[in-house]
Image 1: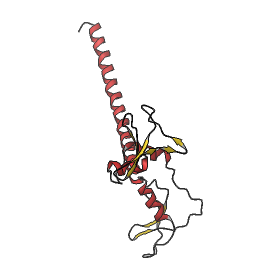
Image 2: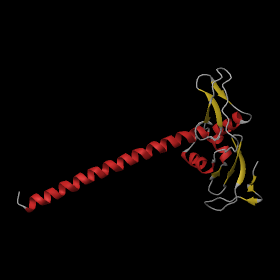
Image 3: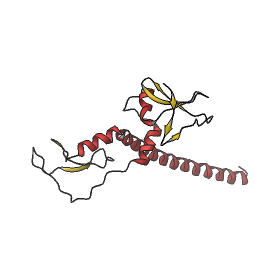
Image 4: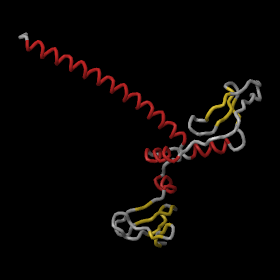
Length: 176
């Protein structure tokens, strides 16, 4: 069953040849195809299903988009440290996953306490690729340190070469 593809009341056109796109079902997934050049437009939501990607696999573009769109959840409330239900020691407050914005109470020996709604927010963070976002942040941080060390080493070697060239000119000027 084919029909014209529309979004917000506007007909979608092929970005390559400007032919109006047609909506079709491909493997039970709705996609928009161009009858002219045979290109296919797939919405973000259906892309993983169509490609067959597992939900935990994210592309670099998706991770970059998450970085731009994700804002940590903020809380404006008085900070209270809670006692562990098991040992009664005060628990540490920790940002789950370091970038989720969900502050949970953790006992290092016995477990974690999730206030109402926190577990759901963490599940959403994970489902949106938050864990992959965390991995990308660590990789970026490591690459930044590596780049800094590489720049320092190149600078050091450059100074050695410059010094050796000066000495070579000096010795050539005095006839050695």
